[in-house]
Amino acid sequence: MKKLALISAVMAGAFVATPALADPMASMTKAGCMVCHAKDKKLVGPSFQEIAAKYKGQGVEATLFEKVRKGGSGSFGPVPMAPNSPDKINDADLKAAIDFILKS
Image (cartoon, rainbow, N blue to C red; front, side):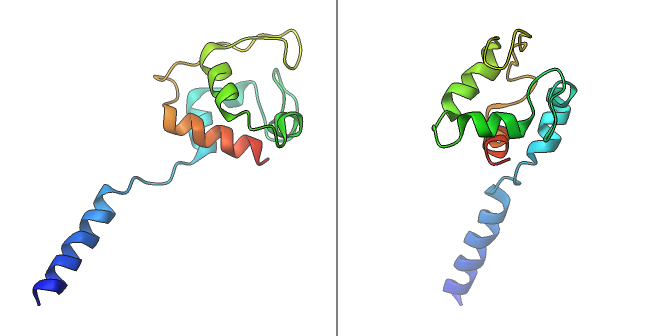
């Protein structure tokens, strides 16, 4: 009986401690990314599909993370991307968004 109580307590703790899965589209919309980007068409910035195609198989997640944080221009044309601080999109949501974009 004690084992059953212990297992139940551990399982309940696991559900409480497990964060909800991030919704990359919701995070990007809230952060304002969708004002300049879309999944399948160029707006002000490149589409997610263009980004995924350009960086396919290159392991650029850390580079893109830094680019989003610092902003910049030149990768897809002359229009600069504004920097995006953690108060706009937190690190976990940004990583999830980059993974989502690279799988587009």
